[in-house]
Length: 133
Image (cartoon, rainbow, N blue to C red):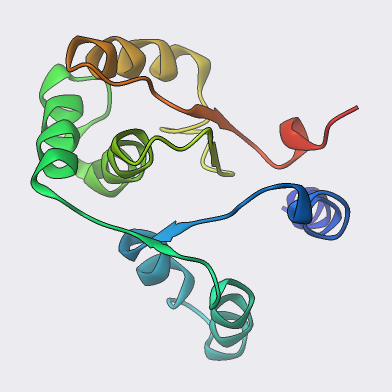
């Protein structure tokens, strides 16, 4: 956990300005949860990011991802992250969620669903993977 936090801090300091960052309401909900002081700090860090819309298309794609079995139904928020980023034509989806998002086996299955619906899924990766070279 500490290594992930440090990698995130490093990415934020060294690389963040090289990207146009966005959030969704799902991200805002997650960032505002937990320890009040830490939540406040997270919310301040992302307060200027544009918010991606949740649309009928994103809801439909999220449902398709869940219905495909690629992501379990109890992880609907994870499917929503992918659907919102995909429909919004994001290049990357940055996450430390390696259970359902930054997971090579799941990504392949989700990409098939996205492609079948006419979308290209963004690259889903961790801050470590997006550090550049």
